[in-house]
Length: 52
Image 1 (cartoon, helix red, strand yellow):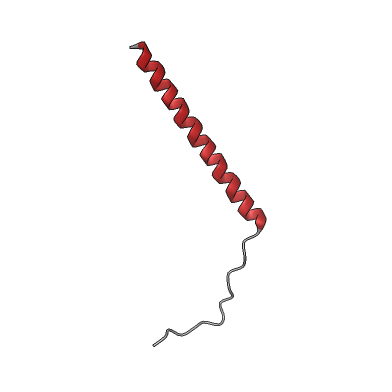
Image 2 (image 1 turned 30 degrees about the vertical axis):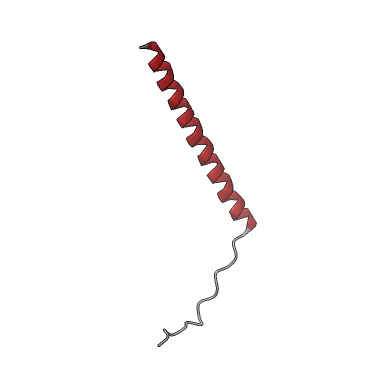
């Protein structure tokens, strides 16, 4: 048996290019921030390791 199909639910609207671009920009900004934080942490660890 198949479950009943609801015909009152419209298909999901396609996402707008503006929304996709905004999400891509947020992802790039997050990636940049993560990369900078990791690089800074590695530089600090390296600097502290050379002192001791």
